[in-house]
Image (cartoon, rainbow, N blue to C red; front, side, top):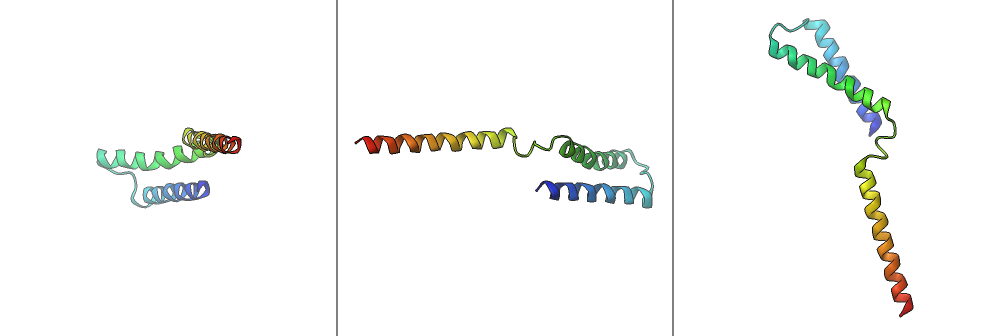
Length: 86
């Protein structure tokens, strides 16, 4: 998934740069703002992916799911221990 994100961000950046080279800088302010957003979004995204390679594996969401999984395993172990005592 991370590689796909790199590929799509770089593709978007190349398309925006191609449009800049082909059409030139837009004249209207609305198009200029839209162009800046389309230019900065993949740059910031690729920089963030590159800067923190462990972000995908240790995000707060993945840690929460890991905690829930461990809690359920602990509950199952307690239930098995209770059944073995009876």
